[in-house]
Image (cartoon, rainbow over all chains, first blue to last red; front, side, top):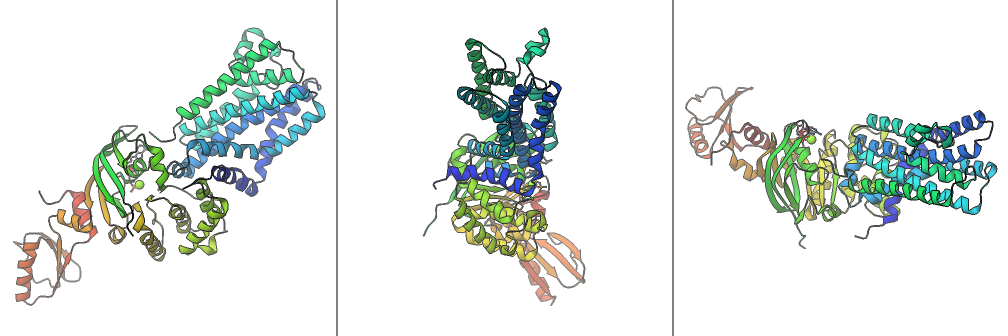
Amino acid sequence: MNRNVGSQVYASVLVNSIYAMLNYPVTLISTLLAPLSILAVVTFASHGTLLPVAAEGALIMNMVSSGTSLQGDLSHLKNDMRLQDMIVSSPTGPGVYVFGMAISEIVYSIPTLIVLLIFNVLFVRTTPLGAIVIFLDMATIFTFSISLGFLLSTFSSDIVQSWAFSGILSPILTTIPPVYYPISYIPLPYRYLAYVSPTTYAAQIAQNAVGFTTLSLGTVVLYWIILLSITALFGYLAMKRSRWRDV
Amino acid sequence: MRYPCVQISVSHISKTYAGNVLALDDVNFSFNHNGIFSLIGKNGAGKTTLIRILSTQLLPSSGGATINGFDILNQTREIREIIAAVPQEARAVPWMTPLQTITSYLMWRGYTHSDSREMGKNVLRTLGMEEQEDKKNRNLSGGQKRKVLVATALASEATLIFMDEPTTGLDFISRKELWNLLASLKRDRLIILTTHYLEEAETLGDLIGIMSEGNMVGFGSLGDLRKRVRYPLSIKIFSEDFDTSGIKGEVQKTAQNSIQIYTGEGEAYELAETLLSRHLKFTVQEINLNTIFESLVRGDELNE
Ligand SMILES: Nc1ncnc2c1ncn2[C@@H]1O[C@H](COP(=O)(O)OP(=O)(O)OP(=O)(O)O)[C@@H](O)[C@H]1O
Ligand SMILES: [Mg+2]
């Protein structure tokens, strides 16, 4: 039989975002609120000076929350619905299933992305090249967080465990590291710790693209290499190490 | 027209879960058959574990199996092309409708949206659920929810379908509707199902597997299984006034002034002659699956 890959991806989008959004529109407000609230707090607390940083930070947080939501959604479908078992015992491979689920998370965050896009266009100055860099930066951090989300979901045996994973991931990837504020605000020996998080590199690249900081070309290239390597590593782990079949 | 048969060969499968729970203990069987294979056994016997291993959801601890010659350990792609499964604990997503549930499952298998909807509508009609197709799953009864999940796999093109307790919670009429659907599908497929309704296993099962404590203690057709037990015949005497001492077999006093005797063929013949000569009313029957199940699980079988 000829299997229609578009259809397979669309199935994930239907189940995980379209049907869910139509049923519970309130979920859209909850995804919107987290990045916007920190954006507002940072902007007001800095009297507007950190607005461009926080605007990029909110975008990064939105990308990371796609991964943490994916983790929770996959765990729910796997452990509570046993849907993943039905998918494992079918021609649908992990790649197309997770790709569809990842797309569904983007669909879910479309309202947030629209609001942040308008905000960026109105308040943040950048060049066309800068806009492209920011887009690629966000796509990379999205890929990283989706891989991490899938990896964790396959190790989770319960939605309660997944909530705990989300509760840990979100602060250590978005609120603690210098995503919403400049890295120079962290006193020195501790500043190095920030470089453990891939979101630090993504934020540095974005802050450079909007002209808030000025990094040398060498530094930008180095940050891209590190960010892409971490993403590739997690992508690889997600494909190899994640448990599609239980042990 | 002849249909290719599904071939399954299981050799030395064992499964120990974390915490040293031995769920399967060296299971072996093989067959080359279309139709229905009913797996029965007490709670915790290992049915779900075996089904999950064969449907490539769970790795065995040791041993292996092939399906149509493909290895379940490392040729999963080929196997997954032809299978579908309904897990024991699967639940229909509460905020989706039955039609959406089946449609999305078929789309995951690679059918277009419109084909999937069409196939979904058809299977729901067959199962007498067209009235419910656009209700929310959460508003269905327990049995109706179960039927929705069973329908997903049955609507697909899979030639090997695993169903773990598909009829649990279904009323008698719904079960019979499902039996009819299974019977109409089984000619060119193999359906492996587990059930706690022994009359269902007996009616449906072209092959029956009896599991006990991680072992396959009985495997074959009903006739094959009957040959395995020591007392394959059941004689019911409608009188209390009969001396059963010295009878080779198992004697049970039942209610309504009758005596129930399980015995072998030779003894049954002699007993029948005695009963006839004494003008006592009696019936002779081959034992049913309930009795076979009980004696094989008890380990009470013919010494070979
Ligand atoms: N995930 C698990 N972890 C540890 N032990 C398990 C797990 N799943 C099942 N078991 C154990 O393995 C044994 C077999 O369980 P299994 O689910 O295969 O039984 P079953 O025959 O399907 O029973 P039932 O009729 O109740 O569904 C049981 O002793 C059970 O406690
Ligand atoms: Mg079970």
